[in-house]
Length: 147
Image (cartoon, rainbow, N blue to C red):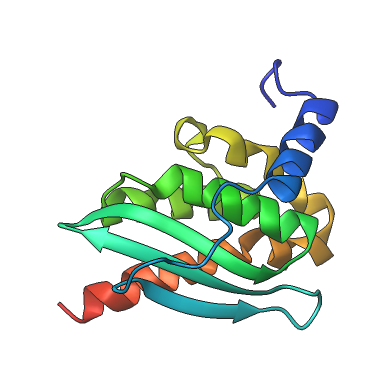
């Protein structure tokens, strides 16, 4: 864990993104790719919205009801993928998943998502931490298949 990232700071980042999510809203225009996601183990029931222009993700939003971990991780995910290409976003998603499952990962692309690095210690929270990420990955891969 980076020296500057202690447990209290990690909790504060998660709580901030839960209480003040920057990307929690419905799209105000047409053309968004979307995916509905839910979890049988938690209250998580969200929609992910993705807007892509010329292979660049120009907007990423979500709405619905979700627990603290799911809301915060999805909000941070949105921060990370906006203004990225689809391939860059898929790489970020892969690194996040690697981190969650305790596999080698590229920390340099995760920014605040690194606060979920200890999620593996609470197996029941893994689904909460990856729900939005899985949905985004599904949207991106499905969109690739249509090409």
